[in-house]
Length: 282
Image (cartoon, rainbow, N blue to C red; front, side, top):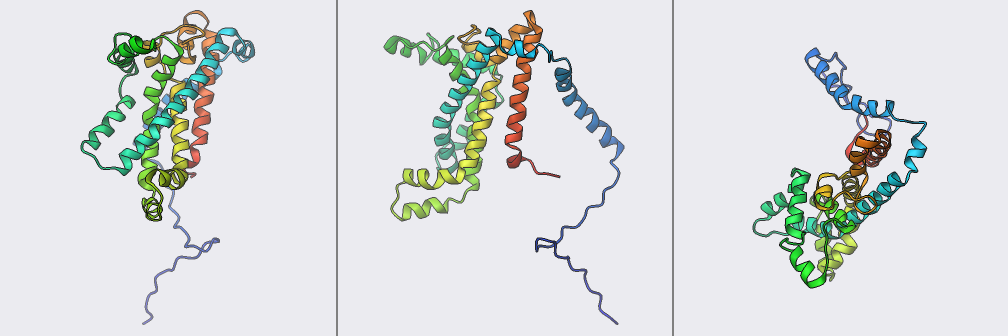
């Protein structure tokens, strides 16, 4: 009798084994209906924003003084907050990923707490810490005459507070995935730990830093609760685009829609920029 042979995988055009084809079958109705409802629930509000947008009057809305001031302040403050997050967050992510110390798990949990903390609570916490009568703010005011609440600097601090955890999580994950033996080899050859971090580690984790910076920038651009609580809503000084949207809904709905479209466009751009990192094609 002839021995039965196993079917061998045919090589693909690239030289590797051909992936087995998955049979496409019908979608079960109990999964199809909730999935379509979820898709509609997420997409219909966005489509409504596009449909009801005042496209003809959009150029005049975007060039108005109030909208331009809010847009300019939002871009500047979000960029400054991202810079603060980079300067402070990258070293923090390295400490969490590369060093062992008591309570590291607790520190990691506390660092990521602003991700789930209500933004208004974060603003109250900032007031208690950095306000004129705050734990740190009292000394800043008495010794240096620095007052942070209800200023443009306060906007940057509020945005950095809520955005930095996104950067820390992204960079820490990239550091844990990177091989630490490259750093060890550099230190064995005589480089200091900081030189190894600067010349070896940073180039390795650059994609993670870029992704975290983009996420932090987008989160800072859309921050509302902590900003209005800690910095207030003063046009030209602390009124960012989310605050302008909230105020315009009461007086000028078309301006609110115009600002919302800008924030929507930024969000789509962020997702498009991170597509190759987090998403795979079908």
